[in-house]
Length: 235
Image (cartoon, rainbow, N blue to C red; front, side, top):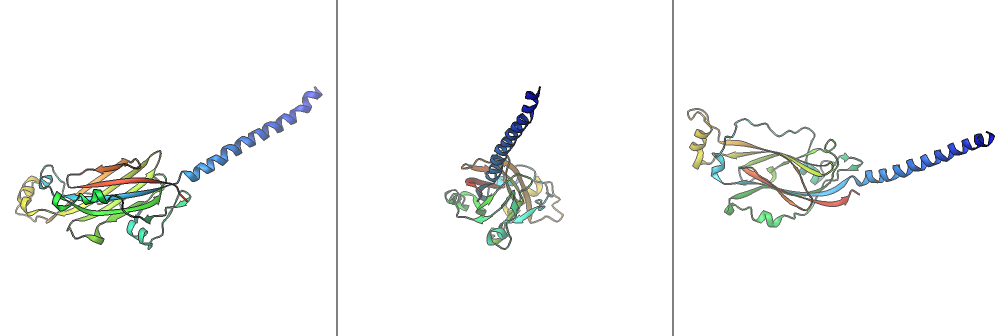
């Protein structure tokens, strides 16, 4: 009995050391994994409008559409030019930085001669974490708007198991003179009342996005090309 009792503290000490070693071995890789879970991506976005007149009268377009949600939104251009500091996401700075465009060949095909016009084209890098922590980035075409069409809205990149990108965009376009009467009749507007010169269109989309692939988000009035590139863990 004395022999057994004298061994008990030794066994308890042994198991405590084993348990401590297990916790340390589990904790250290987990901490390293936490650091690696803040990936850095390059996101490139092209937003363009289409000149196809049939898109105005092929379906009903509501006169009142909700404006893009600006809650928890940062202005992308302010982040890129340094007038706004990048917030912390996860345990890293979001580190939004301007980079060279890679989709120039695709952009070159979106010409007025082919029935398109680019409203926004920008590429940037950023560190990215989960949906809850990531802010939305406000984009618009105010800096280079010579089209007469006004683009406003948000883009949000986040990473859960996979990378996702959310768009909430609004496009205000002038109603083309050639189809104005047809559009008024199609929308059942009172031709004797006040008819607006412009109409607003909404594009909301959430898309799982694979790095290295070009993704197309379609809308009868305008569309989005988006490409994601993985740059490795955040530094």
